[in-house]
Length: 208
Image (cartoon, rainbow, N blue to C red; front, side, top):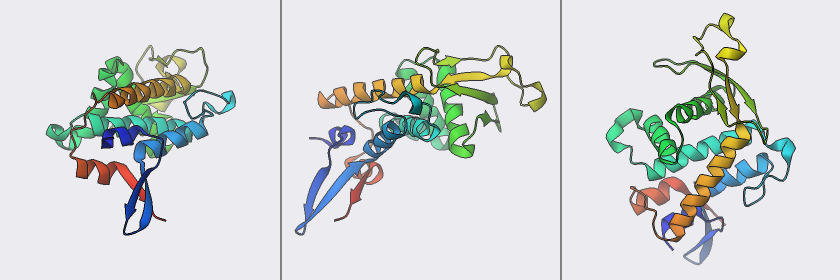
C-alpha cells in the first residue's frame, strides 16, 4: 500500500515503534468523517438524516476537503503565494466544474471559513457576493445572480444574490473523493509531494 492509498483509507494505519503501537490517520479521513457526521451522512457518504444536510460546520468541512485535495494533487509551487486559490480553482475545473461555479464555491469557502457567514467582500478582483444557501434534494447546485452585487448593502435584492445548494456541493465532493480513491486503488493517482512531506503534512499520529 502506498501513502496515497493510505490517504484515502478510512482504516487506521498502525505503526510499531520501540514496542509501542501508534495509529495514523490522514487529514482527509478526519475531515470527511466529521463532514459526514455533521451533515447526516453514513460512512459511505449517503444521506441518512435529511434535517442535517444544511449544517454549516459539516459543509465547511466539505469545502476544506476541496482545499486539501487540491493541495495534494495540484502542483501550485510555480504559482507562489497565490497558489492556494489557483490550485483550488484548477482542481474543481479539472473535475468538471464550470469556471464561474468553481469561483463561486471558493468564495463561499472564504465566507464560511473567515466569517462563518454568507457575505464575501473582495479586496481585489470581482469576488463580492451575498449568498443564500439551501439543502434541498431538488434545487440546482448553483444559481448565479442576474445582476452581480456591487457590495452596497442598500442594493441587495434577490437578483443580486448567489444561491448555493450545500447538499449538492457536498454530493459533488463525495463523488470526487470516491473517484480519486478508485484511481488510487488502481495505482493511477500520484501526488507531486515527496513521501516525507506528504506524510508529515497530511497525516497525524495518535499516541498510545
